Image 1 (cartoon, rainbow, N blue to C red):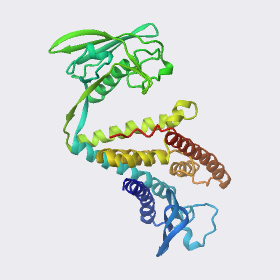
Image 2: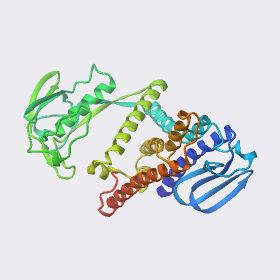
Image 3: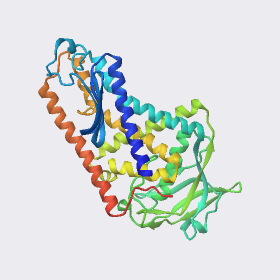
Image 4: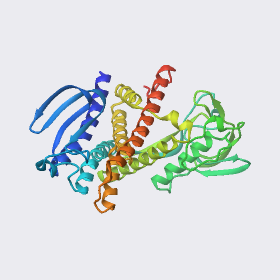
Length: 389
């Protein structure tokens, strides 16, 4: 059943995206020739009015065919005014942007609803669990509140404060993440970033001592711990976990929290795609259609809330990636429509658009095949996709 539900979830995201284009085109008077779920060859179809509604055999997306998508398409005079190429720039941008906009709205509504219904977790710095036999087991206890960490990086002492009581949520989250990263990378020469990624063990030197400041039963204390290498995680760790404080929020706060989370995911997505061209490790982290589908399928049997979160993030990612300014992505159509507007309405030549489409298609295929290769590798070597009960 999880296979079917995951497929339905993906199909709905595609349908809603294409419905955005479809209804926007109808709203501005464009002639829609075809609305297709998935790509040809056609499995089934039915025509209603001037539009054919069909289902394709290749479940990798969908499309809306509007009359005159090609500027060189020969059209009778009565259809020219209702064609895509014969419409003003603002109408074309409106129609193209409507698809990603629907995905953005879906992501926002899901996250907003989840934050409103469940509240949010404010990062905590209190030790919630100490793993038996770990380096932290002999010196820390559950309930200890960590207030800072000191360690040597490249011969210099780095101190990060962790106390989050008087900080905003964003500042607290950044400080706590920095504290956790500092502990996890206590053996690394790499520079600690306030909100950066934990360096991999390949960037680490020999284990170093981490000095922790904490408060226990209202009394401050200091202790030193040497991180231990974890072969599974490929990093050094102390063997402790932090808690978080659950906080109920109203609809307004839930909305701003959802927007903040969406912005964070958007910026990280853009950064990750940029790294594909120069960072081999970043390329290994990319997931494709198979991986996204499998993560969604596994999450269905683990946690419905997790499933909704994943669907929201996939919907957001679809919007972000589609808005990259490369043909045949939606962002490419918007980009060249803006170029035309800046040229005073002068059409961009078909040859230029075709060359741009080739470059864009190569980039899209690169992203697709890198993700697919990673997905297959994770399946073959048994790594999996990280969703567990």
